[in-house]
Length: 364
Image (spheres, rainbow, N blue to C red):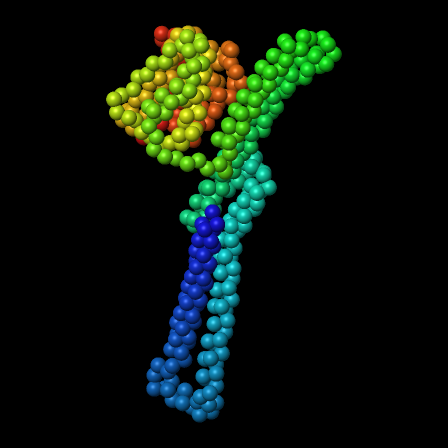
C-alpha cells in the first residue's frame, strides 16, 4: 500500500507540474502572438505612414516607441502569469481534494470505524479520473466492507463462545459445590467434573483453532500434498475410535496419486473433523472418496447413518449450530473456514440410500 501511495503521489506531482508548465507555455506563446500582432499594428503600411512615423520618431525619439512596446509586453506577461496561477490552483485542488477524502477514510478505518453507513465517507468508484486513485478508492472500499464483516462475525463469535464456555463451567461449579457440602458422592461427581473438563478443553482447543484460521495476519505455508495419502492418514488416526463403534472404513480412490497445492496442516484438520463427525452418526461404515475431474478435485465423506435433520441442513456449517448428538457446533465451521482458505467449496446433503454426504471441491 505504501509503495502504491508513493507511486500515486509521484504521478500527481508530475501531472500538476506538467499542467503548470503547459499553462505557462501557452501563456508565453499567447504573449508572443499578441506582441507580434501589436508590433505589426504599429508598423507603417504605406509611404505616407513611413513619413509620419519618421516625423514622430524625430520629434519624440525612437525610445518612446520601444518603451511602450516593452510596457505592453510586461503587462501581458503579468496577466498571463496570474491566469496560469489561478488555473493551476483550481486544477491542483480538484486533484488533492479526493486524496484528502481518501486520507480521511483511511484514518476512519484506522480508528476501527468499519461501518459504511455514512455514505459521505464511503469512497466512490471514480474519484478524479486518475486510474491509480480510482483503484485505491475501490481497494479501500473493499477493505472496509471486509473489515466490517469480519468485525461483526468476531463479535457474534465471542458472544456464542462465551455462552458455550459458561455451560460446562457452571456444571463443574455445581458438582464441586455438591462435593464441598457433602450432597454428592465424590466419585460420581468427580467423573462428571472430569468429563466436563475434557469437554471444556476440547471446546477451547476448537475455539483457538478457528480463531487462528480466521486471523487475517496468520500466514500458512502451502505445498504439494498427496490427498489420497492425507485422507488415509486421517482415517488411520481415528480407526481405533471407529473400531469401538464397530464402524468400518472404505476407500474409493483412483490408481494414480492425486496431488494438490494446499496447506496440509489445515486440510488434515478438516478431514479429521469430517471423519469424527461421520463416526458419531454412522451405523456400520464410512466411505472416503477422492477423484480428480476436469478442473477440480472432489473429496467426499459418506456415512450410512440417519442423515442430517432437514431443518439443520441449511445451517450445518454455521458456528455453534449443533445437530442431534452434536458436540460443540464448531467442527464443521472449522472445515468450512479451511476449505475457503483453499478457494474451495463444501456442501452437505443427505444420500438417497440414507446417511450424510460431505463434499469438498478444490481447484486444481
